[in-house]
Amino acid sequence: MPVLWKRPATVQLPLPLPLRRTAKSRECAVMAEGHDKAREHDAHLPPFYSPRLTPSGPNNVPEHDLKAQDRAQPNRPQASALPSYLSLSSSESEALPGFVSPAFTPPATPGTATPAQNREAASIPVDSSIPDGGCGAKKPRLLEILPEVNCVVRARIPTTTGTEMFLHLYTNNVDQKEHLAIVFGNTIRSRSLDAVRSGETEMDRMIRGAYTGRLYPGRTTSQLPGSQAEEAKSDAPLVRIHSECYTGETAWSARCDCGEQLDEAARLMALPGSNGGVIVYLRQEGRGIGLGEKLKAYNLQDLGSDTVEANILLRHPADARSYGLATAMLQDLGQSEIRLLTNNPDKVRAVEGPNREVVVKERVAMVPLAWRGKGGIKSAEVGEYLRTKIEKMGHMLSMETA
Image 1 (cartoon, one colour):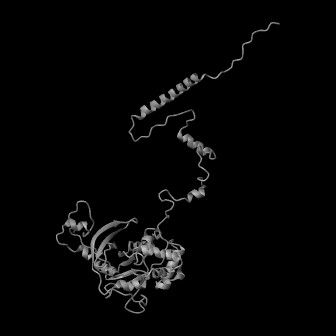
Image 2 (tube, rainbow, N blue to C red; image 1 turned 180 degrees about the vertical axis):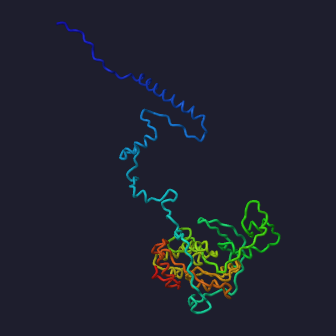
């Protein structure tokens, strides 16, 4: 039987390399044409517009559809999963701090969690002229003559809490430091600031803060026509004598409660029903020994000494501060009777001056916020710090309330 010729099976051979390159080039040309059209469209847009993304295949889905797919497939693996060591559970991610604050920053500076409720200050009557007047038995050494002080400038400071205060800067004849008076309210004014100076203009007076009322653009005189100074209330104003503490006020230190006391004093003076007040801010870092020696004392405390022992080991007094400047500044601000925010009995007598130029009528205890269950600073260091103040320095607090 004759064998018929059979057509061989068709075999699909790969394209030669030059032809494959040609096909690829044709595909690239089509894509390039699409990009060119997009660029022509974008060329008419303002320069701050981001370039438009060009579709690259049939899998392009509108954004709302992608979101719908994500909701419909919650367990679908993500296209670019994070490494396991960067993946966090929901409970862990909720505990992370926000992007506004770096991870090493505390969530709040110690002392800033002061309660916002309008709680008035609880005062205790005192009288330093009698032995049992509530000022302790120790009489601090006082300057025979008060220093001379001069307020050189005053400025309005709006605060983060919404209230306003006036910051007064003082010079004196004792040291070269710039001591401050933070004044709340409009009834407390500096005599040395308001005094007329030879040759000064109205603009000079406004620039250094010797004006009444409020500054505004275009104002030409320091005294507003028809303006009258507000009458001071009969109650004695609150006063806090505060010594500078860089670590407690700026560096988030939990070794002391200085920042907390400063915040609490400002809160009390800014209350709506308050008679205003003054925070006399003295540059007496480290209880008068300076920041460098104070840091050495911190190291001694870590080696086992308390705050008093550390100062003595460094050949400093347990407390090297003086308050004659504070007395003189209060006199300049017209304050002869005050309510003092303090736990320190020495401070009550010392701020009154050698001849009781300023009389402390009442003392307002500064009870730590943590002791009152109001947040505040909670650390072993601040606990020992307060214990030493009570047991060795006679501060009028009770550890039983802690």
